Image (cartoon, rainbow, N blue to C red; front, side, top):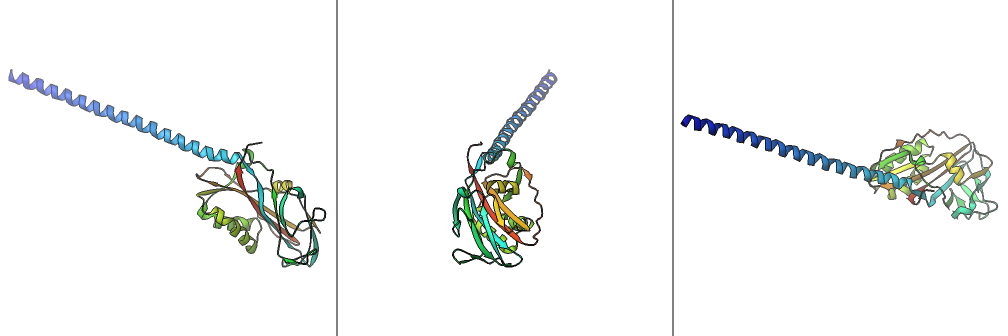
Length: 256
C-alpha cells in the first residue's frame, strides 16, 4: 500500500512538472508573439517616418535661387555682354541689372571685371531670383543624402568634378556650409544644365568656349532616406570660360 502511494505521488509530481513546463513554454511563446508584434509595429512607424521625409521632398518647391554669382575668364581682355533670359523674376542684382542691356563689363583673363556703366572694379556678377520650379516624384529619384558633418568634404569633391576651381569652391562652401553642417542629414541634388537654362537662360557675347552653371538644390533631413546616387560628369575648362554657381533650399509646397 505504501509503495502504491509513493508511486501515485511520483506520478502526480511528474504530471505537475509537465504542466509547469508546458506553462513556461506557453508563456515564452506568448512573450515572443508580443515582442514580434511590437517590433513590426515599430518597424512600420520607422518606415512611415522615412516615407514622410521622402514625401516632403516630393512636395517641395524652390522659392528662390540664392546667390547665383557669375565669374568671367576670357583668354584676353575683352568687352563682355551678359543677359539673363527671365529678368522679370530677378529679386536683387549687383551691379544693378539693366532690363534692356543687361550687364556690360570689361573682363580680364584673371577674372577681374570692370562695370562699364559705373567704372567699379568687380570680381563677379551677382543675381538672385524667384523660382517657379516644383519638385515632384520624378526629379527626386536621384541625388545624395549626406551627413551634416560631412558636408564640406562632400562639396569639395563634387564641386571639383563639376569644374569649379579652389577659389570658386571655397566661396560656394563658406556661403552654404553654416546652414548645412548643423543638420543631421542633407538631401542634395545638382540641377541639370537643361533645368538651369529653362529656369534662367544665360546669354553671353562673345560666346564662351566653356560655360559651367551649377545650381544645388538641398533640404535638411531628420532621417536618412534611400535614393539613387546622382551621376555627375567631369567638366573640363577650356578657352574663354564663364562659371556660375548658386543654390536653393527646398521649401514645402503643393505638387503641381
